[in-house]
Image (cartoon, rainbow, N blue to C red; front, side, top):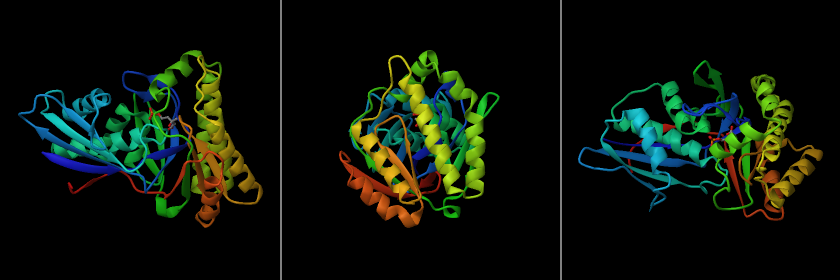
Length: 320
Ligand code: PMV
């Protein structure tokens, strides 16, 4: 009763921020993302009838902090009367730093847990399980360009376009290591309750989703760039206007934005997006990836730069 799965993080272009149902962890808005390829989380789940408690290790270290979330996800996928599990997670990129590590972790956990317990679930069902644990994780079940739509009391996730059909690149500029100050679930509730812009943010989301969907369908880079940067800055405006304010950027995040603007002025096909953390993600056409990478690397305060293609969805692998 053991299974291993791999999933990649995804980066939202039209962002999700806020929940409409806390208990079911349902997002207030739909979203559109790209799944990455070179960053990944490998998750293995072994079920043991004799074991009394679940255990979790992350990159080789025991993690009691994340264990309750993992146990809750296992209860939902396998059932509350399940055998206890030994769960081991390994990521090849910094975790809890705004690089969507919970997305890849819970997407991989959904696949590994279902397989370890002998269930053959559809990718849609797996994505709902992953989304229950972490809103953005639902999107990492699919590769390429992915849309999450809200339905009456659930979510529907689907692929809009495969990675090979529009092989854009993503360059991640790391400007700070270490966990973020406020986790996204807590921060979303602060915004919902206190940001004067929150209702408008929710009300206008469909417009951005329509524009992004059309841009992806017609491979219109400029249109996708404009709507993605707008969605990112709008989400951060909601955060900044919250009480207490939620400011995830540092000075180098701003400098990276200026670097992207300077590249755009030279005709380079690139745009930025930033999640609940200080890292900037630059999305660009593949011909321009070297120049984008060099420019971000040379930006003051950038610690490291990770360059990746777009990739596929979560999948089972042979146990290592
Ligand atoms: O999946 P969560 O609950 O950690 O929320 C992620 C929210 C953002 O990354 C900021 C935006 C998004 O759509 O991924």
